[in-house]
Amino acid sequence: MGRQRFVLSGLLGIFAILCWFFPLFHVRQLGGSDANTAAAKATSEESEANDQPSRLEDYATKATDLMQLWEAFETDAAKAKKQFGQQAGLGGSVYFCVRGSGTVESIEKDRVMLAVRDAKRRVCLELGIVVDSTVRDAVGVKASKFPNSQEFNAFSSELNRQVEDAVLAPNRELIKVGTLVDFVGCGKVGGKSDLDPLCLIPIQLKVSQ
Image (cartoon, rainbow, N blue to C red; front, side, top):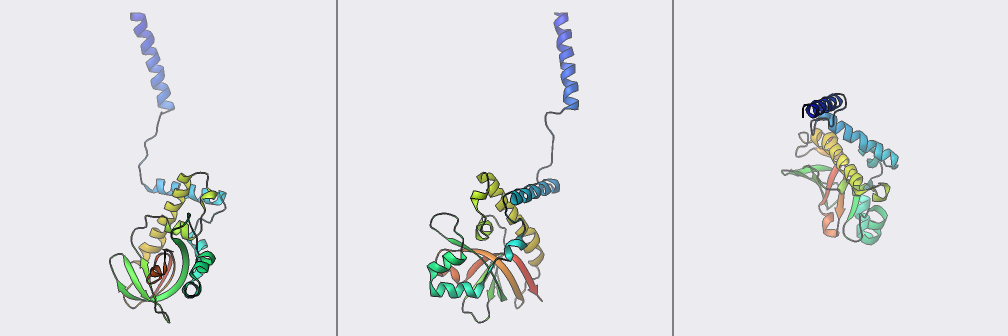
């Protein structure tokens, strides 16, 4: 019995030494800056590997002119959707990325209404927390470019984080009634009723005081 205890104690000692030099796990703070940086880096690397831009500025350069989109819908809605829109699945809403400018007409809790010069329709800029995949789908990111749905959804989350940090947070306090706003935004249209107001999540903003 004493021999067995001696052997067992020796094995436990060896195990403890191995755990000291080769820990079974590491404790990391969740949601910290290091975690966010790592997530952003991983998403950026995934984006490059799949030939997808990772910055909002890159997508903004491809946006459709707002007035052009409205006129296209007046002429032929089906053609406008096909020419300028992105469809995430079969049927349902079509997503658009558009650029334009307007004067702030009213401000609600999480949205701003813009009056657009020489247009009867208005634009609604959504300034609340971005939680869905509208930005990803409107700029044309395809699921086929990613190895699985988890990475596809992670890419969407990273784009939303960029919208919050780089676009919404710096401009919320600058937007006042009467100010001129140049914007690029992403939205979805199910029918013509969604065109007035056309509600967009901004991916680029310039506020003129």
